[in-house]
Length: 129
Ligand code: AMP
Image (cartoon, rainbow, N blue to C red):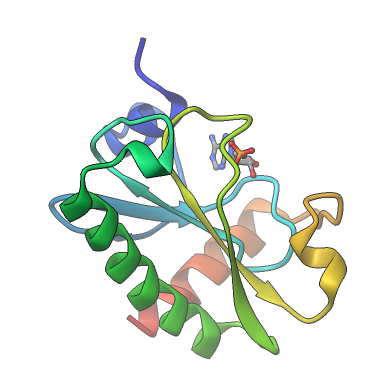
């Protein structure tokens, strides 16, 4: 069965899309640790990041770097943190989290946003790409 992220990539589930190319897709995390929390996903559905082939792994890092630079311009933060977990969704994804305090990288710090706020944030990040 396709992962929830494959369904997002295929447009079967809605998302607040940030960026896409032939191999990768970025969208806002629906349960963010901080405003602007973004996920970068390879279209190829692989569970664990270190099982990716070397080309996809390097491509995911470069795609994530571009998204992170836009995120840093769009969202006020001290820096963009990066995390890889995968305990909830078994489809490789890099969490990009704008950080102002250590608790925001812990996944216990969550912010509630309205649909309008998600849309505004996504638009402001896209403008910086
Ligand atoms: P993990 O697999 O532990 O790295 O966590 C998966 C992340 O995906 C969590 O931060 C979820 O909030 C996020 N997530 C799950 N479903 C969706 C969705 N439909 N749209 C956006 N983010 C999602």
